[in-house]
Length: 219
Image (tube, rainbow, N blue to C red; front, side, top):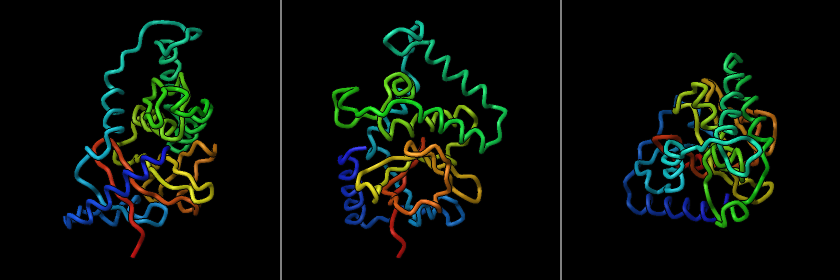
């Protein structure tokens, strides 16, 4: 996750404040409302997030050629490995599926976008990440679509862009609503933790397939 995302966040926040058109906040009953101790405010315009819109489009349209797993490009063999893994954990409990998906994605190589794609900031779809590896948002995207395949509802999932105050760097994780808690799938740990156990993350914005939210410190 790059500095550009932080700049985007502050530009969006400033623009929304100046416009004085308050976006409707999510109902207080939702578990995401107090994510990492911050309030969320739903935003209307997804065009602020072109990288994410590109992911949604490419995830559906990306063609996978035939091939075997020894070849130097993502092909049907690699895709079938992913789908076979997901099929193997369908019978697990919800918590078991979360743990398995987190471990599966976290085994992939951490690789900077500049190395993989010659770009400072590129959001990879699962079909790219599973072969190339990737950085923090790429882990989160693959976990997001893995859980969608397993039947998790879009409204129970959010990719969260945040600031890691320990490392002083931007970061991204996947947050999953479990009804009375929000669990965090993070490439920095194999453990799936409640957001209440994590004190060094400051959420900036979060997104799912149809909506996005700014996160605001409590007044």
